[in-house]
Image 1 (tube, rainbow, N blue to C red):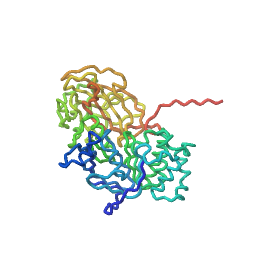
Image 2 (cartoon, rainbow, N blue to C red):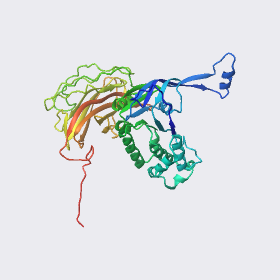
Image 3 (cartoon, rainbow, N blue to C red):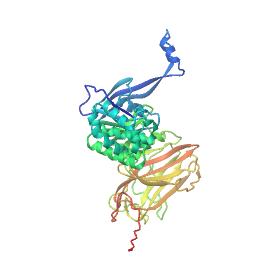
Image 4 (tube, rainbow, N blue to C red):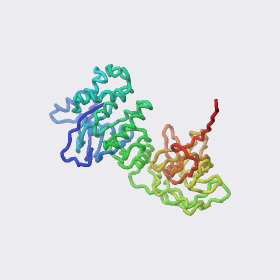
Length: 468
Protein backbone atom coordinates (compact mmCIF):
# COMPACT_ATOMS: atom_id res chain seq x y z
CA UNK A 1 0.00 0.00 0.00
CA UNK A 2 1.20 3.51 -0.75
CA UNK A 3 0.95 6.52 1.50
CA UNK A 4 2.13 9.95 0.47
CA UNK A 5 1.61 13.67 0.29
CA UNK A 6 0.77 14.90 -3.20
CA UNK A 7 2.38 18.19 -4.28
CA UNK A 8 -0.31 20.86 -4.39
CA UNK A 9 -0.92 23.10 -7.37
CA UNK A 10 -1.43 26.77 -6.50
CA UNK A 11 -4.31 27.20 -8.91
CA UNK A 12 -6.33 24.21 -7.64
CA UNK A 13 -9.96 25.28 -7.32
CA UNK A 14 -10.72 25.86 -3.66
CA UNK A 15 -13.84 23.67 -3.74
CA UNK A 16 -12.12 20.63 -5.26
CA UNK A 17 -9.90 18.17 -3.45
CA UNK A 18 -8.87 16.52 -6.74
CA UNK A 19 -8.58 18.22 -10.13
CA UNK A 20 -7.59 16.35 -13.31
CA UNK A 21 -7.28 18.37 -16.50
CA UNK A 22 -6.68 16.61 -19.82
CA UNK A 23 -4.46 13.98 -18.23
CA UNK A 24 -2.62 11.56 -20.53
CA UNK A 25 -0.18 8.86 -19.50
CA UNK A 26 1.92 7.11 -22.16
CA UNK A 27 4.63 4.47 -21.93
CA UNK A 28 7.39 3.33 -24.26
CA UNK A 29 7.35 -0.42 -24.76
CA UNK A 30 10.57 -2.14 -25.83
CA UNK A 31 10.66 -5.67 -27.23
CA UNK A 32 14.21 -6.38 -26.01
CA UNK A 33 16.11 -5.13 -22.94
CA UNK A 34 18.88 -3.62 -25.02
CA UNK A 35 16.56 -1.62 -27.30
CA UNK A 36 16.31 1.24 -24.81
CA UNK A 37 20.09 1.76 -24.87
CA UNK A 38 20.28 1.41 -28.67
CA UNK A 39 17.56 4.04 -29.09
CA UNK A 40 19.35 6.45 -26.74
CA UNK A 41 22.71 6.07 -28.53
CA UNK A 42 21.54 5.81 -32.14
CA UNK A 43 22.95 8.80 -34.12
CA UNK A 44 19.87 8.96 -36.36
CA UNK A 45 17.45 8.74 -33.39
CA UNK A 46 16.01 5.49 -34.68
CA UNK A 47 12.89 4.44 -32.83
CA UNK A 48 13.07 1.03 -31.15
CA UNK A 49 9.91 1.28 -29.06
CA UNK A 50 6.17 1.22 -29.44
CA UNK A 51 4.02 3.88 -27.78
CA UNK A 52 1.30 2.68 -25.43
CA UNK A 53 -1.21 5.16 -24.06
CA UNK A 54 -2.61 3.94 -20.73
CA UNK A 55 -4.80 7.04 -20.25
CA UNK A 56 -6.05 9.60 -22.75
CA UNK A 57 -7.34 13.10 -22.01
CA UNK A 58 -8.97 12.47 -18.61
CA UNK A 59 -10.61 15.42 -16.85
CA UNK A 60 -12.39 15.21 -13.51
CA UNK A 61 -13.13 17.45 -10.53
CA UNK A 62 -13.85 15.87 -7.12
CA UNK A 63 -15.28 17.85 -4.22
CA UNK A 64 -14.84 17.24 -0.48
CA UNK A 65 -17.15 14.59 0.91
CA UNK A 66 -17.61 12.75 -2.38
CA UNK A 67 -17.09 9.03 -2.74
CA UNK A 68 -16.17 8.41 -6.37
CA UNK A 69 -16.31 4.96 -7.93
CA UNK A 70 -14.00 4.00 -10.79
CA UNK A 71 -15.01 0.95 -12.82
CA UNK A 72 -13.91 -0.61 -16.10
CA UNK A 73 -12.60 -3.75 -17.65
CA UNK A 74 -9.15 -5.08 -16.77
CA UNK A 75 -6.54 -2.96 -18.52
CA UNK A 76 -8.78 0.09 -18.83
CA UNK A 77 -6.39 2.35 -16.89
CA UNK A 78 -7.97 2.37 -13.41
CA UNK A 79 -4.81 1.62 -11.43
CA UNK A 80 -2.75 4.02 -13.54
CA UNK A 81 -5.22 6.81 -12.79
CA UNK A 82 -5.04 6.14 -9.05
CA UNK A 83 -1.24 6.15 -9.10
CA UNK A 84 -1.28 9.53 -10.84
CA UNK A 85 -3.60 10.97 -8.18
CA UNK A 86 -1.46 9.44 -5.41
CA UNK A 87 1.65 11.06 -6.86
CA UNK A 88 3.39 7.77 -7.63
CA UNK A 89 3.37 8.48 -11.38
CA UNK A 90 3.61 11.74 -13.28
CA UNK A 91 1.39 12.45 -16.28
CA UNK A 92 2.79 12.60 -19.80
CA UNK A 93 0.44 15.51 -20.50
CA UNK A 94 -2.13 17.47 -18.52
CA UNK A 95 -2.20 18.33 -14.83
CA UNK A 96 -3.03 16.37 -11.68
CA UNK A 97 -3.67 18.21 -8.44
CA UNK A 98 -4.79 17.05 -5.02
CA UNK A 99 -5.36 19.05 -1.84
CA UNK A 100 -4.22 17.53 1.45
CA UNK A 101 -2.87 14.18 2.59
CA UNK A 102 -3.45 11.12 0.44
CA UNK A 103 -3.57 7.53 1.71
CA UNK A 104 -3.67 4.97 -1.09
CA UNK A 105 -4.25 1.23 -0.77
CA UNK A 106 -2.85 -0.12 -4.01
CA UNK A 107 -0.76 -3.26 -4.62
CA UNK A 108 -0.40 -5.56 -1.63
CA UNK A 109 2.79 -4.86 0.25
CA UNK A 110 3.63 -1.63 -1.57
CA UNK A 111 4.83 1.06 0.81
CA UNK A 112 5.79 -1.45 3.52
CA UNK A 113 9.28 -2.46 4.52
CA UNK A 114 9.00 -6.24 4.57
CA UNK A 115 11.67 -6.58 7.27
CA UNK A 116 9.85 -4.28 9.70
CA UNK A 117 7.01 -5.38 11.93
CA UNK A 118 3.43 -4.23 11.47
CA UNK A 119 3.74 -1.62 14.23
CA UNK A 120 7.08 -0.37 12.92
CA UNK A 121 5.54 0.10 9.48
CA UNK A 122 2.68 2.03 11.10
CA UNK A 123 5.12 4.46 12.72
CA UNK A 124 7.19 4.67 9.53
CA UNK A 125 4.21 5.62 7.34
CA UNK A 126 2.90 8.13 9.86
CA UNK A 127 6.26 9.91 10.01
CA UNK A 128 6.36 10.06 6.20
CA UNK A 129 3.03 11.88 6.30
CA UNK A 130 4.37 14.43 8.74
CA UNK A 131 2.99 13.08 12.03
CA UNK A 132 5.10 13.14 15.17
CA UNK A 133 6.01 10.06 17.18
CA UNK A 134 3.69 11.29 19.94
CA UNK A 135 0.77 11.58 17.51
CA UNK A 136 1.39 8.06 16.26
CA UNK A 137 1.59 6.72 19.81
CA UNK A 138 -1.87 8.19 20.47
CA UNK A 139 -3.26 6.23 17.50
CA UNK A 140 -1.45 2.97 18.21
CA UNK A 141 -4.23 1.18 20.08
CA UNK A 142 -6.82 2.15 17.48
CA UNK A 143 -4.66 0.64 14.72
CA UNK A 144 -4.14 -2.57 16.69
CA UNK A 145 -7.87 -2.89 17.38
CA UNK A 146 -8.95 -2.21 13.78
CA UNK A 147 -6.33 -4.47 12.17
CA UNK A 148 -7.22 -7.29 14.58
CA UNK A 149 -4.27 -9.49 13.62
CA UNK A 150 -3.17 -10.33 17.15
CA UNK A 151 0.49 -11.07 17.80
CA UNK A 152 1.33 -10.61 14.13
CA UNK A 153 1.52 -6.85 14.78
CA UNK A 154 4.95 -7.57 16.29
CA UNK A 155 6.07 -9.85 13.45
CA UNK A 156 7.83 -8.81 10.20
CA UNK A 157 5.23 -8.17 7.51
CA UNK A 158 7.08 -10.50 5.13
CA UNK A 159 5.30 -13.28 7.02
CA UNK A 160 1.83 -11.78 6.50
CA UNK A 161 -0.90 -13.26 4.36
CA UNK A 162 -2.70 -11.04 1.84
CA UNK A 163 -5.58 -10.62 4.28
CA UNK A 164 -3.24 -9.46 7.04
CA UNK A 165 -1.62 -6.97 4.68
CA UNK A 166 -4.99 -5.43 3.87
CA UNK A 167 -6.08 -5.31 7.51
CA UNK A 168 -2.92 -3.50 8.54
CA UNK A 169 -2.86 -1.22 5.51
CA UNK A 170 -6.46 -0.08 5.92
CA UNK A 171 -6.01 0.43 9.67
CA UNK A 172 -2.91 2.58 9.05
CA UNK A 173 -4.60 4.50 6.22
CA UNK A 174 -7.57 5.60 8.30
CA UNK A 175 -5.56 6.36 11.45
CA UNK A 176 -3.12 8.73 9.72
CA UNK A 177 -6.21 10.90 9.08
CA UNK A 178 -5.95 11.45 5.31
CA UNK A 179 -7.98 14.00 3.36
CA UNK A 180 -8.19 11.63 0.39
CA UNK A 181 -8.44 7.84 0.71
CA UNK A 182 -7.79 5.72 -2.39
CA UNK A 183 -8.79 2.04 -2.39
CA UNK A 184 -7.92 -0.17 -5.37
CA UNK A 185 -9.70 -3.54 -5.01
CA UNK A 186 -7.89 -4.03 -1.71
CA UNK A 187 -11.03 -4.85 0.27
CA UNK A 188 -11.81 -7.82 -1.98
CA UNK A 189 -9.35 -10.02 -0.08
CA UNK A 190 -10.77 -9.24 3.37
CA UNK A 191 -13.30 -11.42 5.14
CA UNK A 192 -16.94 -10.36 5.52
CA UNK A 193 -16.57 -8.92 9.02
CA UNK A 194 -13.57 -6.84 8.01
CA UNK A 195 -15.28 -5.59 4.84
CA UNK A 196 -18.32 -4.49 6.84
CA UNK A 197 -16.03 -2.63 9.26
CA UNK A 198 -14.24 -0.93 6.36
CA UNK A 199 -17.45 0.22 4.68
CA UNK A 200 -18.71 1.68 7.99
CA UNK A 201 -15.46 3.61 8.16
CA UNK A 202 -15.95 4.84 4.57
CA UNK A 203 -19.35 6.20 5.61
CA UNK A 204 -17.68 8.04 8.50
CA UNK A 205 -15.10 9.50 6.11
CA UNK A 206 -17.79 10.78 3.80
CA UNK A 207 -19.74 12.31 6.71
CA UNK A 208 -16.55 14.05 7.83
CA UNK A 209 -16.15 15.71 4.42
CA UNK A 210 -13.26 13.54 3.28
CA UNK A 211 -12.85 12.23 -0.27
CA UNK A 212 -12.80 8.54 -1.16
CA UNK A 213 -11.86 7.00 -4.52
CA UNK A 214 -13.01 3.39 -4.80
CA UNK A 215 -11.95 1.01 -7.57
CA UNK A 216 -13.92 -2.22 -7.48
CA UNK A 217 -15.66 -4.81 -9.62
CA UNK A 218 -18.41 -5.11 -6.99
CA UNK A 219 -21.16 -3.07 -8.64
CA UNK A 220 -23.40 -3.28 -5.58
CA UNK A 221 -20.71 -1.46 -3.58
CA UNK A 222 -20.53 1.23 -6.26
CA UNK A 223 -24.30 1.74 -6.16
CA UNK A 224 -24.46 1.74 -2.38
CA UNK A 225 -21.48 3.91 -1.46
CA UNK A 226 -20.48 6.08 -4.45
CA UNK A 227 -22.09 9.45 -5.13
CA UNK A 228 -20.65 9.44 -8.66
CA UNK A 229 -18.84 6.87 -10.78
CA UNK A 230 -16.38 7.08 -13.64
CA UNK A 231 -16.28 4.38 -16.32
CA UNK A 232 -12.95 3.84 -18.08
CA UNK A 233 -12.40 1.80 -21.22
CA UNK A 234 -9.12 1.42 -23.09
CA UNK A 235 -7.67 4.43 -21.31
CA UNK A 236 -10.54 6.78 -22.09
CA UNK A 237 -13.25 8.11 -19.83
CA UNK A 238 -16.54 6.81 -21.21
CA UNK A 239 -18.75 8.58 -18.69
CA UNK A 240 -18.63 10.21 -15.26
CA UNK A 241 -22.16 10.35 -13.90
CA UNK A 242 -24.44 9.21 -11.11
CA UNK A 243 -23.62 5.64 -10.16
CA UNK A 244 -26.79 4.06 -11.56
CA UNK A 245 -26.18 5.48 -15.02
CA UNK A 246 -22.48 4.60 -14.88
CA UNK A 247 -23.21 0.98 -13.93
CA UNK A 248 -25.67 0.70 -16.83
CA UNK A 249 -23.00 1.99 -19.23
CA UNK A 250 -20.46 -0.46 -17.79
CA UNK A 251 -22.84 -3.37 -18.37
CA UNK A 252 -23.28 -2.26 -21.99
CA UNK A 253 -19.51 -2.17 -22.40
CA UNK A 254 -19.18 -5.66 -20.99
CA UNK A 255 -21.77 -6.84 -23.52
CA UNK A 256 -19.98 -4.96 -26.36
CA UNK A 257 -23.19 -3.02 -26.94
CA UNK A 258 -22.25 0.50 -25.87
CA UNK A 259 -23.03 3.32 -28.26
CA UNK A 260 -21.76 6.74 -27.21
CA UNK A 261 -24.66 8.44 -28.99
CA UNK A 262 -27.66 9.23 -26.77
CA UNK A 263 -30.20 6.44 -26.78
CA UNK A 264 -33.86 7.34 -26.51
CA UNK A 265 -35.99 5.12 -24.35
CA UNK A 266 -38.81 3.12 -25.86
CA UNK A 267 -42.13 4.79 -26.53
CA UNK A 268 -44.93 4.43 -23.96
CA UNK A 269 -46.70 1.12 -23.99
CA UNK A 270 -50.45 1.61 -23.66
CA UNK A 271 -51.91 -1.27 -21.71
CA UNK A 272 -49.87 -4.30 -22.82
CA UNK A 273 -52.02 -7.36 -23.35
CA UNK A 274 -51.11 -10.67 -21.75
CA UNK A 275 -49.12 -12.95 -23.98
CA UNK A 276 -51.36 -15.83 -23.02
CA UNK A 277 -54.98 -15.48 -21.99
CA UNK A 278 -58.50 -14.97 -23.23
CA UNK A 279 -57.98 -11.57 -24.83
CA UNK A 280 -56.65 -11.47 -28.40
CA UNK A 281 -53.36 -9.66 -28.98
CA UNK A 282 -53.20 -7.21 -31.86
CA UNK A 283 -50.14 -7.02 -34.03
CA UNK A 284 -47.56 -4.61 -32.68
CA UNK A 285 -47.14 -1.23 -34.32
CA UNK A 286 -43.53 -0.23 -34.94
CA UNK A 287 -41.95 2.21 -32.52
CA UNK A 288 -38.68 3.97 -33.22
CA UNK A 289 -35.95 2.75 -30.95
CA UNK A 290 -32.16 2.74 -30.73
CA UNK A 291 -30.14 1.32 -33.58
CA UNK A 292 -28.17 -1.82 -32.80
CA UNK A 293 -24.53 -1.60 -31.98
CA UNK A 294 -23.81 -4.64 -34.12
CA UNK A 295 -25.78 -7.35 -35.79
CA UNK A 296 -27.70 -8.14 -38.92
CA UNK A 297 -31.07 -6.69 -37.90
CA UNK A 298 -32.02 -3.38 -36.27
CA UNK A 299 -33.41 -3.58 -32.75
CA UNK A 300 -36.45 -1.36 -32.34
CA UNK A 301 -37.99 -0.41 -29.03
CA UNK A 302 -40.89 -2.62 -27.94
CA UNK A 303 -44.09 -1.74 -29.72
CA UNK A 304 -47.36 -0.65 -28.12
CA UNK A 305 -49.71 -3.58 -27.65
CA UNK A 306 -53.47 -3.16 -27.83
CA UNK A 307 -55.35 -5.03 -25.15
CA UNK A 308 -56.66 -4.83 -21.62
CA UNK A 309 -56.31 -1.52 -19.83
CA UNK A 310 -54.62 -1.59 -16.44
CA UNK A 311 -56.50 -0.95 -13.25
CA UNK A 312 -56.47 2.62 -11.98
CA UNK A 313 -56.51 5.98 -13.71
CA UNK A 314 -52.93 6.02 -15.01
CA UNK A 315 -52.00 3.80 -17.97
CA UNK A 316 -49.22 1.27 -17.80
CA UNK A 317 -46.42 2.96 -19.72
CA UNK A 318 -42.81 2.28 -20.55
CA UNK A 319 -40.20 4.20 -18.62
CA UNK A 320 -39.00 7.02 -20.93
CA UNK A 321 -35.54 6.74 -19.35
CA UNK A 322 -35.25 3.00 -20.00
CA UNK A 323 -32.01 1.75 -21.51
CA UNK A 324 -32.50 -0.38 -24.64
CA UNK A 325 -29.71 -2.14 -26.49
CA UNK A 326 -28.69 -5.41 -28.12
CA UNK A 327 -26.88 -6.85 -31.12
CA UNK A 328 -30.07 -7.73 -32.97
CA UNK A 329 -30.53 -11.48 -33.34
CA UNK A 330 -33.63 -11.30 -31.14
CA UNK A 331 -36.03 -8.55 -30.11
CA UNK A 332 -38.47 -8.21 -27.22
CA UNK A 333 -41.53 -6.89 -29.04
CA UNK A 334 -44.18 -7.14 -26.30
CA UNK A 335 -44.01 -7.21 -22.51
CA UNK A 336 -46.15 -6.64 -19.46
CA UNK A 337 -46.68 -7.00 -15.73
CA UNK A 338 -49.88 -8.78 -14.62
CA UNK A 339 -51.64 -9.57 -11.35
CA UNK A 340 -53.02 -12.94 -10.24
CA UNK A 341 -56.22 -12.25 -12.20
CA UNK A 342 -54.30 -11.82 -15.45
CA UNK A 343 -54.83 -8.05 -15.52
CA UNK A 344 -52.10 -5.57 -16.48
CA UNK A 345 -51.05 -3.62 -13.41
CA UNK A 346 -48.42 -1.34 -11.98
CA UNK A 347 -49.39 -1.98 -8.33
CA UNK A 348 -48.50 -5.37 -6.83
CA UNK A 349 -49.77 -6.67 -3.49
CA UNK A 350 -47.58 -8.43 -0.93
CA UNK A 351 -48.19 -12.18 -0.77
CA UNK A 352 -50.01 -12.30 -4.13
CA UNK A 353 -48.94 -14.10 -7.28
CA UNK A 354 -47.93 -11.96 -10.24
CA UNK A 355 -46.76 -12.59 -13.80
CA UNK A 356 -44.05 -11.12 -15.98
CA UNK A 357 -44.53 -11.76 -19.68
CA UNK A 358 -42.61 -10.96 -22.82
CA UNK A 359 -42.84 -11.89 -26.47
CA UNK A 360 -39.55 -12.35 -28.30
CA UNK A 361 -39.12 -12.31 -32.07
CA UNK A 362 -35.99 -13.76 -33.68
CA UNK A 363 -34.21 -12.07 -36.59
CA UNK A 364 -31.61 -14.84 -36.97
CA UNK A 365 -31.12 -18.46 -35.93
CA UNK A 366 -30.56 -18.73 -32.17
CA UNK A 367 -30.02 -21.90 -30.16
CA UNK A 368 -31.02 -22.07 -26.48
CA UNK A 369 -31.54 -18.36 -25.78
CA UNK A 370 -31.63 -17.21 -22.16
CA UNK A 371 -34.71 -15.27 -21.07
CA UNK A 372 -34.33 -13.16 -17.93
CA UNK A 373 -35.85 -10.52 -15.70
CA UNK A 374 -34.41 -8.36 -12.92
CA UNK A 375 -36.11 -6.15 -10.36
CA UNK A 376 -34.13 -3.18 -9.06
CA UNK A 377 -34.84 -0.33 -6.71
CA UNK A 378 -34.79 3.18 -8.12
CA UNK A 379 -31.13 3.62 -7.10
CA UNK A 380 -30.20 0.74 -9.39
CA UNK A 381 -29.57 -1.89 -6.71
CA UNK A 382 -30.58 -5.32 -7.96
CA UNK A 383 -33.15 -6.76 -5.56
CA UNK A 384 -34.02 -10.04 -7.23
CA UNK A 385 -34.43 -11.76 -10.57
CA UNK A 386 -33.86 -14.99 -12.41
CA UNK A 387 -33.49 -16.48 -15.86
CA UNK A 388 -34.08 -19.71 -17.72
CA UNK A 389 -30.43 -20.75 -17.33
CA UNK A 390 -30.52 -20.42 -13.53
CA UNK A 391 -33.77 -22.41 -13.42
CA UNK A 392 -32.38 -25.00 -15.88
CA UNK A 393 -35.35 -24.55 -18.20
CA UNK A 394 -34.58 -25.64 -21.79
CA UNK A 395 -35.64 -22.95 -24.26
CA UNK A 396 -35.18 -24.66 -27.64
CA UNK A 397 -33.89 -23.43 -30.98
CA UNK A 398 -35.39 -20.74 -33.22
CA UNK A 399 -34.98 -19.57 -36.78
CA UNK A 400 -35.38 -16.21 -38.45
CA UNK A 401 -38.97 -15.00 -38.13
CA UNK A 402 -39.87 -17.29 -35.21
CA UNK A 403 -41.48 -15.89 -32.05
CA UNK A 404 -41.89 -17.19 -28.52
CA UNK A 405 -43.96 -16.18 -25.50
CA UNK A 406 -42.18 -16.29 -22.12
CA UNK A 407 -43.88 -16.09 -18.73
CA UNK A 408 -42.39 -15.87 -15.23
CA UNK A 409 -44.81 -16.54 -12.36
CA UNK A 410 -43.92 -15.83 -8.70
CA UNK A 411 -45.21 -14.55 -5.36
CA UNK A 412 -44.41 -11.01 -4.25
CA UNK A 413 -42.59 -10.78 -0.90
CA UNK A 414 -41.00 -7.35 -1.33
CA UNK A 415 -41.12 -4.34 0.97
CA UNK A 416 -43.50 -1.53 0.01
CA UNK A 417 -41.83 0.81 -2.42
CA UNK A 418 -41.14 1.66 -6.05
CA UNK A 419 -39.16 -0.66 -8.30
CA UNK A 420 -38.03 -1.07 -11.90
CA UNK A 421 -38.43 -4.18 -14.04
CA UNK A 422 -35.76 -5.11 -16.58
CA UNK A 423 -36.10 -7.78 -19.26
CA UNK A 424 -33.50 -9.50 -21.38
CA UNK A 425 -32.77 -12.09 -24.01
CA UNK A 426 -29.17 -13.28 -24.20
CA UNK A 427 -27.30 -16.41 -25.20
CA UNK A 428 -23.95 -18.04 -25.80
CA UNK A 429 -22.23 -18.16 -29.16
CA UNK A 430 -19.32 -20.48 -28.50
CA UNK A 431 -17.87 -19.33 -25.18
CA UNK A 432 -19.03 -15.73 -25.59
CA UNK A 433 -22.10 -14.30 -23.89
CA UNK A 434 -24.09 -12.25 -26.41
CA UNK A 435 -26.81 -9.76 -25.52
CA UNK A 436 -29.53 -10.03 -28.16
CA UNK A 437 -31.87 -7.47 -26.56
CA UNK A 438 -32.09 -5.82 -23.16
CA UNK A 439 -34.72 -3.48 -21.75
CA UNK A 440 -33.23 -1.97 -18.59
CA UNK A 441 -35.77 -0.41 -16.21
CA UNK A 442 -38.48 -0.70 -18.86
CA UNK A 443 -41.44 -0.72 -16.43
CA UNK A 444 -41.74 1.16 -13.16
CA UNK A 445 -44.14 -0.28 -10.60
CA UNK A 446 -45.09 -0.09 -6.94
CA UNK A 447 -45.63 -2.68 -4.24
CA UNK A 448 -47.91 -2.44 -1.24
CA UNK A 449 -47.53 -4.43 1.95
CA UNK A 450 -49.47 -4.27 5.19
CA UNK A 451 -46.91 -6.54 6.88
CA UNK A 452 -44.00 -4.80 8.65
CA UNK A 453 -40.59 -6.19 7.73
CA UNK A 454 -36.92 -5.40 8.04
CA UNK A 455 -35.04 -4.61 4.84
CA UNK A 456 -36.43 -5.14 1.38
CA UNK A 457 -37.65 -8.73 1.35
CA UNK A 458 -39.88 -10.87 3.54
CA UNK A 459 -38.59 -14.40 4.12
CA UNK A 460 -42.07 -15.62 5.08
CA UNK A 461 -40.64 -16.95 8.33
CA UNK A 462 -42.49 -19.33 10.61
CA UNK A 463 -42.01 -18.60 14.30
CA UNK A 464 -42.44 -21.31 16.95
CA UNK A 465 -42.39 -20.64 20.70
CA UNK A 466 -42.47 -23.47 23.21
CA UNK A 467 -42.63 -22.97 26.94
CA UNK A 468 -40.08 -25.12 28.78
